[in-house]
Image (tube, rainbow, N blue to C red; front, side):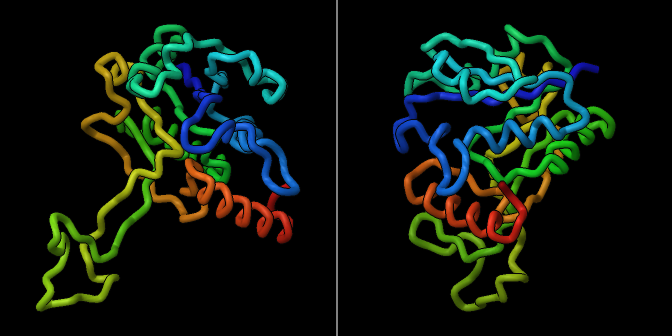
Length: 220
């Protein structure tokens, strides 16, 4: 069974320009961290960076392959499932592992668990989530509690938020335009692992996490 991991990269990101190669204070370009993590994953056969621009090549370490994509997939109105399908059409595999440069604190152990759930335990997909037990509102009224009966937050029904950092899925799913199947494994990860950088504020928070972890000797 062939398992391929890939990191799709769009350099012309709208909300935070060049975010995928933006360096942390005292650190390296953002893309470095997820690629280094993927190289530690034991059950991946090949790793790719999927980008339309050769400018990304200097940021790719040895052992990771560059695959050039059509600039069409950088357009703001291109659906992300089109990006996933185009990669699968170019690189054949039984299982695909989708990660992002914007999730720099995702652990190799989490990626390995997701792959194991799909390749060995009968799930058709797996993705990282954060459990959510908070007071939520929808259409100007409480969504998950009653105003006359306010529970403790830990007693609220658990909801789950996709962290967007990790998706593992079988090829058959992407052929039908999906990355999550009918029998997915929802994999809870920590708040730090779930850190996802899209805006300038997100980057400032991630930079603070990075430098704290660096001070504690957890990162370089």
